[in-house]
Amino acid sequence: MNIIGSNIRDMSRTAVRSIVDGIVANQTAIVKGGIDTPLRLSHFMAQLAHESAHFGTTREFASGAAYEGRRDLGNTQSGDGRRYRGRGLIQTTGRANYREATADIRAMDAAAPDFEREPEALEQFPWALLAGISYWRRRNINRHADRDDVRAVTRAINGGLNGFEDRIRYLGRAKSIWMEPNTPTATHPVLRRGDKGNDVVDLQNELIGAGYRVFADGDFGRHTEKAVRDLQSRHRLGADGIVGARTWAILLLRSGNG
Image 1 (cartoon, rainbow, N blue to C red):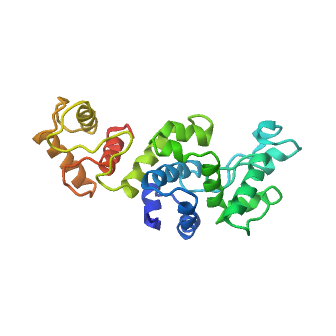
Image 2: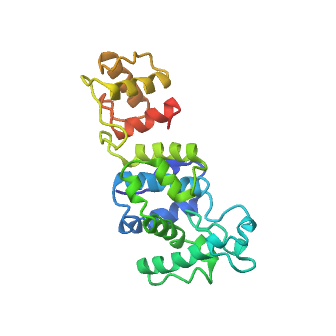
Image 3: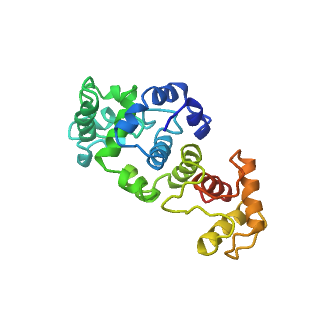
């Protein structure tokens, strides 16, 4: 797996250069942190995109005052809410999480500062990226990514489903970049001409939602293949008529379900 600047800009046209460069320069830490398959990377990058406001910031826009007195975040001292506002690419928030991040990031890089004492350091690279990797592995989010369960991944990051549709859109874009064209996922199998059944019905319904005139009859025949090839050609995928992870991702975005 490799991340180049254009990959990130393909995910978000508003990505700022310092963040793009920071991720690209420190990407080896992602694999070392256990985010080591295309599916894991796709989920990770999708969550980073949303949490960082489209790769636009490493510091929460809000002041952090809303976190004042939040003992569940370890904010026990006056001013902790503002001092430990969200920072890094996954928005590490609260004194307790800054303390946890310090210990874990130092296991990856002994030169890491004490983020509880220097919270602003989490806005800078490599720490902004390492904070995201640290949170991901401390919460064992790979187990959700391996199942392609974007709801569970989002809950592990956010505690709820805030911005869920945005996260799904980014996941579709990430899969179209890092997943091999004909790779199955836990959600969608690889489909080709001659296949039949409910998975083909799902495919045909998505094609209909994307504006193609096909019947949802569960039979992957000539007309379904023609629609798939057209979709692939329009999005510069290999127009082989085989529906793998990248084709599914583009199709779900086109139909409004991704």
